[in-house]
Image (cartoon, rainbow, N blue to C red; front, side, top):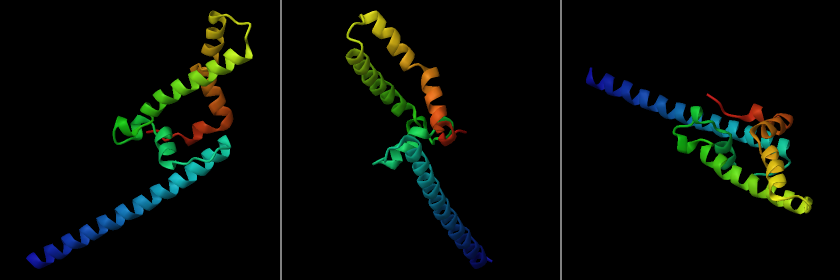
Length: 129
């Protein structure tokens, strides 16, 4: 009886290992598909595909909030802000600070970013729970 239970336990363990390996392969394949779709939409080749997956992963699907897109979103907002500020500064030398601030606010607004993301089809790539 003990030998039979031990054998069943080993078989269960083997099935768990196989399931994990298949799950990992499936995740890797899905990550590759996701990367290709994002690269095609953006016209950019990602050097670190794992960061792309994290950038597209909502907290509801991440193991922890640290594994979600929240920290990258924080950094991306700052980078977008500085790039837009530089473009406005150079393109509109006649604008005063308040005018530049209004243009920047419109350019980096949630609505503007959502519209651009939608045009590029990026909302279909988000990993949501």
